[in-house]
Length: 534
Figure 1 (cartoon, one colour):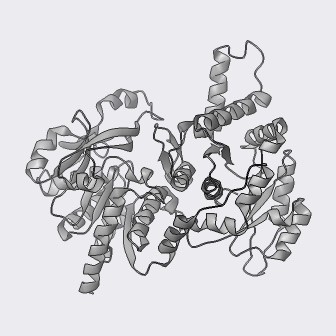
Figure 2 (tube, rainbow, N blue to C red):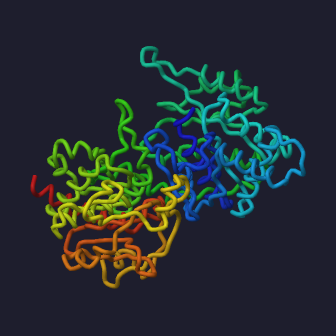
């Protein structure tokens, strides 16, 4: 079922097998006609994650990177649109030698070829493949067909893991297995029998339910793995290992069984769940609301990067989702109790003034403030308006007729916009950034040059660089040719740093990003100050 946690389950299995000494990579398959995830609405689909080599992907690629502590290639992500696009292009190039090109087997063969290519590039011994969507949907049928064909080709080298939901209806109070039974039968109709079933539910699976699933789903009880709700996603590999899932997978694959070493992982997970000191962190954004519900998935990499920064500082976060439009309507009074605020990425005019108000509050009240991409652009506008006295300062994206475009469209983007070339045309992937000597950013990174990932179409307008620097804004990160502003900071402030790039993309559970570590450290000091005030 979509949104059930297939990505985290895949990443967790990968972590377990990696901890046993195997080289792992993971692939995400999305059943959308979209060629990539770049044009998908984040409220509908969740965060867009960008790989080091510049592909806009589903957020689960980020989960793989955070769990496996390695970069995932653009080869490891495919959609229905990208697969069909490739097959059609091959047909146009006569790569099929003039024969009739058919959905079956040519589309599944393209999928299989991509899987093998990604595995070879990563030099992986085990490749994990997550098929998005829900069993029985028309959209992912071609990917299940590819999976069936792979099993037919080499049965001992292919295993199937099904993640299934076992509801506990409130008025009944009993865990129900019927949805899982029918899901397995639907999967059987595609020619696939699961080797393992991960039983997702609000509570651990009992022996009675395991027995029912075993009988009706034609699977051994020992291969039904309990997957209850947990405090932190980083507990999931440890939970799976309680059922010895890694050992069972290796046994079925006829691979040597090695001892698992998850000691450091377990220690970090305990800190996130049980650290005594808590931090109230405000996330200022505009992609939260979907009907009556709040969707945190739009900012999942930011959330996880904050957690990473917290565990290494021996504390745990309490998140507050603050819609920037609410700040526009009701002001900044709710920001006082926050130890620190993160101004998130985004597009367009909506909610921009709320972000600018938040940044002004942080700058004046000396509240730790961390701006990310759009957040940096809003920080530049705030500084231009309220420190440089350029009252009409704004972004070309927000108001194309303004007198002062301190943020403007990147020159190479103008022709693309005119031709409506939106998908995959923005600045994407990792680029070098030089750090100003003795700046706070340079001290945090402890380097003179870094590589960070980008996803933007607008940038700092260098026409205003001199006036802002004279007024105290420090440009502490810039492209090697000094044309692009990558990091700004305000000296003397407890923490006021904003980046045009996305540091959250490169933060890992066992390797937290230095900017988030420094931000959390500043928030801890601010939190102690708040306690003193209280």
